[in-house]
Amino acid sequence: MRIAILGDIHANLDALLTVVEVLQRENVDAWVQVGDIVGYGPEPSACIDVVRELGCVTCLGNHDAAVLGRLDTSYFNTVARAAVHWTAPQLRPADREFLNELQLVVQRDEFTAVHGTLHMPEKFGYVLSVVEALESFEHQQTPLCFVGHSHVPAMYLRREESPRDIHVVPHSEAEISYRGFDRLLMNVGSVGQPRDEDPRAAYGIVDTDLQIASIRRVHYDIESVQHKIREAGLPEVLANRLALGV
Ligand code: ZN
Image 1 (cartoon, rainbow, N blue to C red):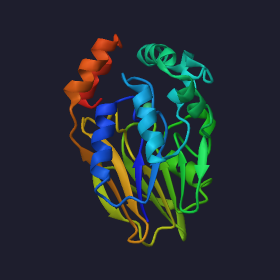
Image 2: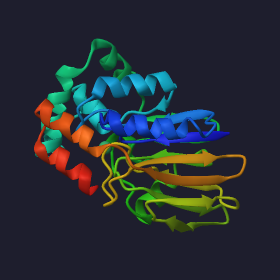
Image 3: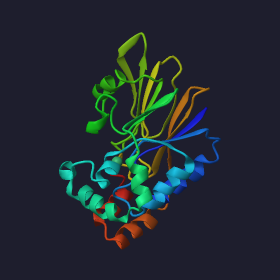
């Protein structure tokens, strides 16, 4: 089975369509989306439509929860909060219904999807290092787990016989074999707002037969989405940061 994984789309339709176009040439059997379809970007409803049309296995992100009024935004920074307040009234009733039905953790036979971590999904913590990966692994029941939230891609691998000895692949673009490992925790980075100083859209693809996992990057039309962000009256910084990948 080939699984395509999208994360942190953040209402960036230009990035999303570019990633989907590339992935549609890859014989994908299943699509996964690890949360934050909306927030920051100018086209929330259109991005929700794409995720629904692809039939993505989808979990709830903190921005998705915030636009529904289900998460206290006092923990959000000013810009994130402004984006939540801009996004909420843009959503159609069907968008709200769709987001409202999303679960924090979604488990299938081969994989689990969660926005933050498996040990505290409702807290939306980050997997930023081996410390959080170890905690999350304790709750991972499937060989694969896909996460997002940090907007920085990385892969963590665990062997059954040495569960405290985590192998880290910190690269923003990588292809690895996970043969011999019983657990893979994959932060797929962000489609719509990368923060690893690489402005290209990030996404993941896993081949479970070959046991190969990849983080890939693709150029998209950043100027197009920057123009839409400014037209929408969203904070200028949200346009600027896309060109820097921060
Ligand atoms: Zn996010």
